[in-house]
Length: 129
Image (cartoon, rainbow, N blue to C red; front, side, top):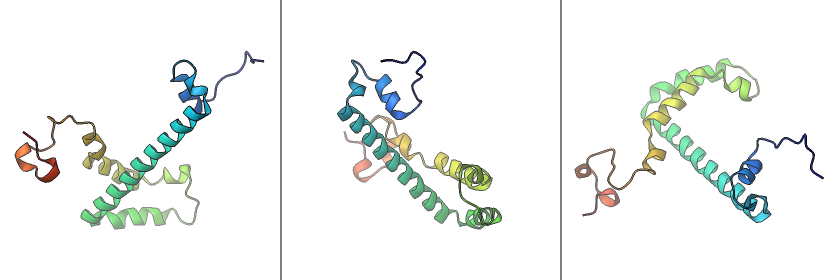
């Protein structure tokens, strides 16, 4: 029944199968939860990234026109991977926004680690005790 020449595909289904013990990853319920969980995480991080890009454009409006001109210079072409890779200024801006906005990093800080001294924090972010 098993094909000795079979090579598992490099996809999320196989990652879940390989990353679980006792064959749990072969269960439809387990796969469904893993797939939905991964999708939700991807939607969340993509949404946060787009939010930060728009926010950073509003506080740095001087970048809007150069990025706009770069996009318009491509002409009337489909936005696929090859053509999007030509948007060097946009790519640079996205990378800088991610560097400026350490949102995802802050989720991994322990209560004793802060970007700012505790005396500068207020509201729900103020250190307790």
